[in-house]
Length: 121
Image 1 (cartoon, rainbow, N blue to C red):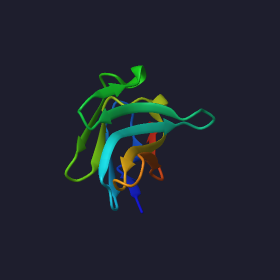
Image 2: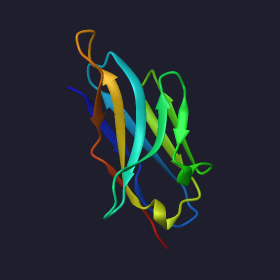
Image 3: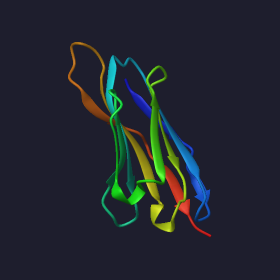
């Protein structure tokens, strides 16, 4: 089966930086898209950043210029560098990957367990 494991969350002061990492493991044939979502208490889960296998990247307006998504295809990993963090960035951050296990299967989404990011003084 497939596992997505996030790491790198924690507590940081406003204006600080954190780097989140997500590693996908298992019998993966191909990864087409990797995304970072976040969910703050009492709010809906929102898309933060996307990177495709072709290298296309998109960000939510709220994080443009502050966050950077990158991936390592050889390692099946995706990172999210978060700079100039604000209290409103506080949330549980989830890694998501659209991938295919084999030629016999269709692509589907998999999720990590989430990692807490808290921005507070």
